[in-house]
Image 1 (tube, rainbow, N blue to C red):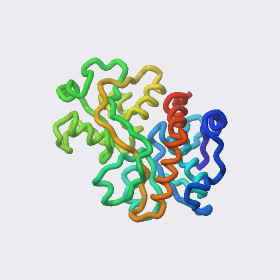
Image 2: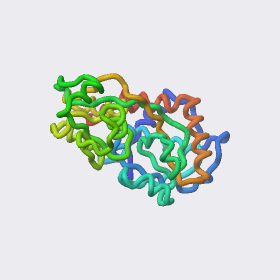
Image 3: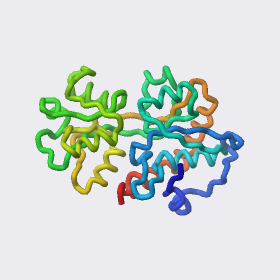
Image 4: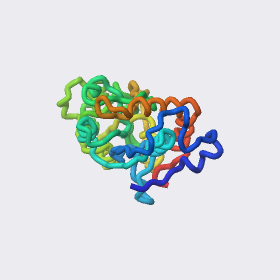
Length: 264
């Protein structure tokens, strides 16, 4: 799938010159690596509403990793529900979609080192006044929260806001994160939990219809996932360390979380 990259536009002024292959990193000798994503988690990865191309922070980061490690990327798309098992089964080499590093997931897949830390926030409609934080939402018994089963927002809703019951009827489960935001805007739910980076993107694109409220609710580290025992883990970790050290990841955060305006 083609994509538009903002990385190239800022590389000349922000990054130090980097060769197509970094001699101090492992050389994967041009092999093809199949990377699967959901394309539903802006600004990490999503479909640009203007061009129809898949773009985002993770695409640019993976593109830079591929360049430095000398491999070719083939992108595939699947749902969040299917992704971890599919990577575990070896259908894809790498999974990326803002995946929180969790101990229980390590039983199925290997994780890269963390490439980003994010905290959970409450996303609500701009005119919301019935609750202002996690405690008051928990007490607002008529309030519904939209979430995907098995994701960090789902567990945060259940264990940090509600009663710990994973069958709590106040949680309305949906297939994609984007669907939860649409349900929020339509009034079908009253709250969506999201990490700060995605939440800011949706607020910026909402034309004043959404806002973030309350204090952050814990935090998550994001990593890429691999089939257990994959020989890609060590090279990818080396590349992540290099991108952190030379400021590339920080520059990408500025591009996608501060400069880019979703939907504009």
